[in-house]
Length: 287
Ligand code: AMP
Image (cartoon, rainbow, N blue to C red; front, side, top):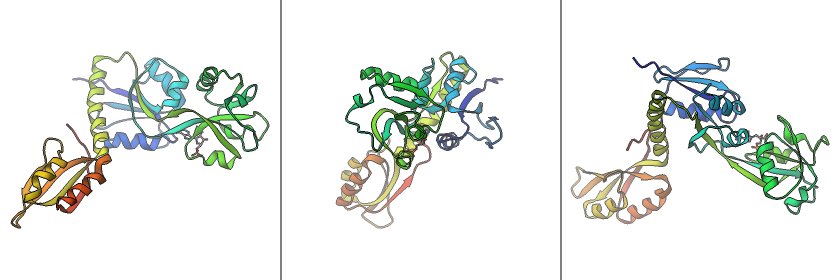
């Protein structure tokens, strides 16, 4: 019997945890997560979940303590460990920006020449400054970076920005976006064939969840004279389903459409005489 279990490291507490747990649940992976446990085992999938600090995850995955990790690209690039990026997951989008006090006379990146910048991301910041030929002093701090200029520690900061609210409430203005981040699934580079096989099964589910999120199931009543025209607009996964209605001369047409084309398609099918259009979410989509 195959007892291989994959170990997935996820953020214990923070901006990524809720969406990460939601993704696992949408993949049909069931487990109990409570705030005090650091490790749990899925009931119905060969996976152990480790709840860790996100900045520790790249190191654990590189060393093989965990096989996989879900975390922000910002931490992956900052830690620069030898891991593979399996899939960008698209949630927890944010940017790493340089911000200065509102009264700082900022004209260009060269306004930072010789200044002190506080950050928790010294590697990404150093790379950016070097690429732009700016020589500034990087002051690494672990958190509450936005306070550094107010307490006289530095002239500027470089930190993650999501809504911009924290900068605003600390009297700072965003002057350079140096990096754009989102969540990603990373993996150890030396996975055993057994673990790779479990990853393949899990990836099938992840892809199904993402495809389902981008698509909608659509049903409508169409006069039979317009079925050809409407079918061309709704190719679906193979072709639309057409079912005759009890009322003579009408059919119900069912298909799947991409979220991005949604409104455009609705307008076109209405012009062809479609009525009673219903749009439903899709839970999983396996091609
Ligand atoms: P906001 O006020 O929404 O711009 O958020 C800024 C604060 O949240 C800063 O203290 C950031 O360090 C932190 N933050 C923003 N986005 C993220 C993220 N995706 N991951 C971790 N921390 C973040």
